[in-house]
Image (cartoon, rainbow, N blue to C red; front, side, top):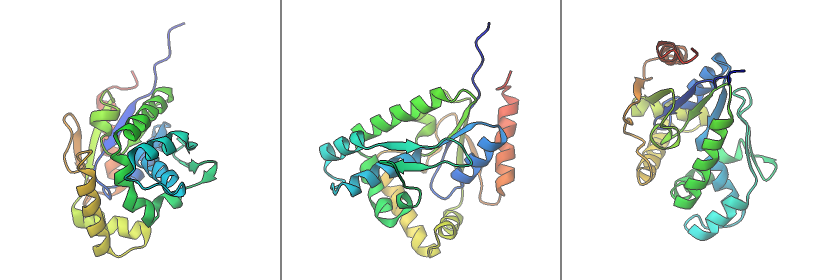
Length: 225
């Protein structure tokens, strides 16, 4: 009996506020695939570090804490839960404390390798396909993805969207996004389209149109043949 072909892997990269999460979950639902938010994984690791009272700058202690923590991630796009040591962490990982510390934890090379290995394992086990979103997905985590997308948007629009999402001031959110982009640039390239990725500017596009463009890429590449 011939081996069943796995579903497509779609890698969606891009800066915060470009619409990666909404687009990725919508797309995953449309093609009946799994969904993985790698940013949530770094946030969960950061929450574990903060809960343990560890300074994010203490490399060795951070690494030990993250490796010993029980981090769980749902891959159903309808319920992409995050749990830290058995407790629901969906809201906690989006808090200000985690947001301020996540770049330091994500910049820890050992932690990053540990989480990237976990991300690759989840991708490999997603037999019906998976939509993976986050920074450095295209170049580092899933360079062999069937479809690679760099989703971007105007900085003002990105800030407006993120502010509406978290109920914050747009100008303050814009400054926070700029701070995070600068901090993350030490580890990734959040404002540069990776080689081989199709650039989609979502500034003036509704979610359904962005998803339609990615579906077209999937169809044009005959992923399901």
